[in-house]
Length: 105
Image (cartoon, rainbow, N blue to C red; front, side, top):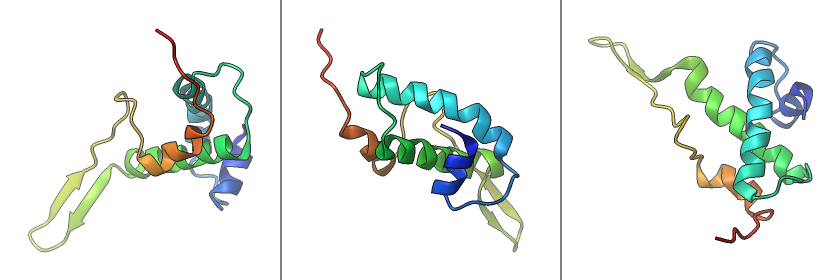
């Protein structure tokens, strides 16, 4: 999958995060193969949507780093990301669930 495909699915035209997407796409493709237990995972529309939505979800917190901000008595809360925990929101993983294979002991 390419950066252009991800940006097209996200309806994004800015080039600001191209390097971030370029780095993340192969990792998300590997994650999809592992999650579905399918090394020959076909990159259907659902899988491509997973990669795009996962880029968007990870980028939302990582790129900005700010989760909440206030002006009165200035206050800021930084986002806690789930990188390394192997978890994504259910609506993002839903794109891969149709491809999941059973794992045998």
